[in-house]
Image 1 (cartoon, rainbow, N blue to C red):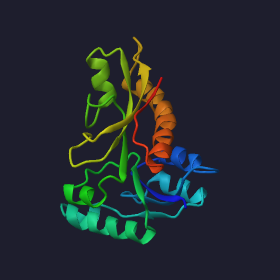
Image 2: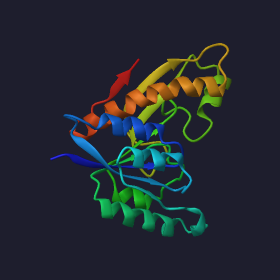
Image 3: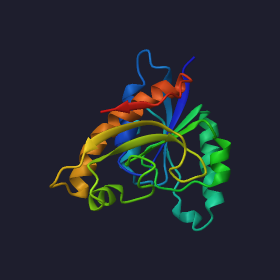
Image 4: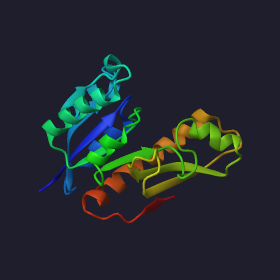
Length: 197
């Protein structure tokens, strides 16, 4: 029986599309829901175009009530009954209470070679620090921001004339390769690390 996957997004959803397009044929999982914290997220329409149920739970009306937002998000997820959550450009920090409810079943993709450059502005930081390589990581989500076990990485060279934007574009290509590869292994119960070059 196929595993059920829900994807959390905030923006355009390109990683969500890569994941959804990979979950076909003999893949051991299927996408059942896409949720965004932004009702105007372009990724919601992309999900619907792919035949995936899509919902928006706007974080803004909750103000500083993060628990209220997460309760609404959790309730919507329970309706869909996913086995695995994939964060794909979801730009909200989740509380330890929420993470605990999905412990061992939640993945995230991050645009750096973790443990380097947790948080934001990863490409600018890599360039400013003179790094020769950059890339992306897929990791299990824990209460430690961008700190869970790394299940896969893909690397790209940092070129002499790179800007954060040009580097981000090359890394994104690798994100679209790496995340589906890790997810396929993860839903099969295999947590061995994958390294793509």
